[in-house]
Length: 125
Image (cartoon, rainbow, N blue to C red; front, side, top):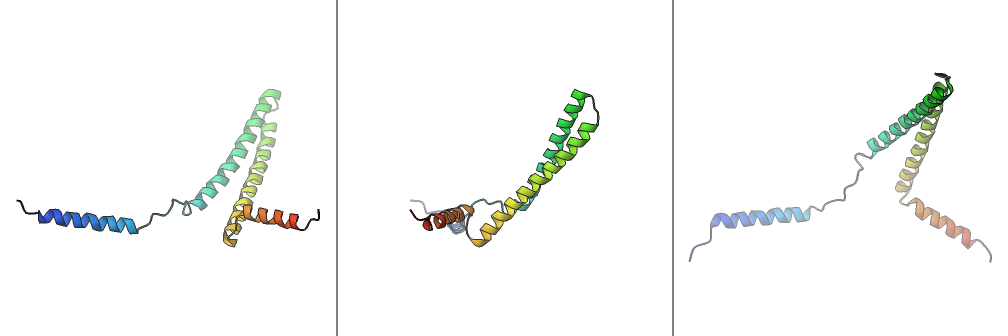
């Protein structure tokens, strides 16, 4: 019979240690917490630029249709800017509400269920 190879035993021991080390390191679910602020900022920038682009497109199209160049385009660019800012503000409020709910340890849906329960408990049938 042949004797066991000592290098194979060391390799097996190393593989066992690597497997044990990988097993103890629990993988956390991929959460975008590190990038979430950047994603929110990009979302707001895209909303603003989309509002400007849509306003420009509508204004340009109406100017081409009515021959009032560039007045309707300028007016609708400002309308698009206002709409983009309004959308950005709505997104900021949504993000703020989510962060406050996360800090409070509750979700908005749990709060809504609790509010509905309070409404039904106080009613008389």
